[in-house]
Image (cartoon, protein in one colour):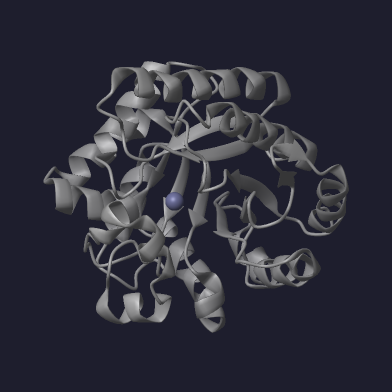
Length: 296
Ligand SMILES: [Zn+2]
């Protein structure tokens, strides 16, 4: 088994669950396990755990029974649709966020990842975001679920880091996404490695993925259209936040992983890419990350 080669290293290397339906979960988790990974991140919108803010307990129990068959550590990602700065939809979105924390607890997941998204120039809107995160972090603290804020490519990662500092909650750390940091640093014009270093004391979780450092403005100007762009073509032209396997693009992954390793990070090394599009290479990605972590 590929797993045996990491015994003694203590590195938990994971991958995200690819898009699937409930019937496909078993197969997806088996493949992830067979590819050698020890952890798996589930986007809570991939499966119908939450319907209009309410938890569908049948779906949670069904999925949990499958998850327990595999020797994987699970982490979670909140829905991409979450918007914690819009007052008119906030009650529903806070309900979804809190339901996400509860679903994690029910599934035995101890960390939930929430996108920082774009900061608002309106202080009141920004305040809504902070209050929502603090409430979720409070709830998570009681349930054993950390709520971590992730930098994304459409915003300066230093603002996401500032948000974590400002939230100043023992149950809220930062999820650092290396691919997002790379695009953002190129676009907004700040230093990638300096920011990486600044994030280290706040690091709760890590996303490892690659791209070519190209910012795609449509992500901000027309998100609905951006979401319809053909993924294959975006790969071909290297457009934006393409989440290709680590070491396949231009993000300085090897140097970054070594800095993070040497800082004493003991969390999960979560590879977050379109793994279903690269499936014959997923085991290789696992071994590439592992050898990078093992080597000087
Ligand atoms: Zn990410």
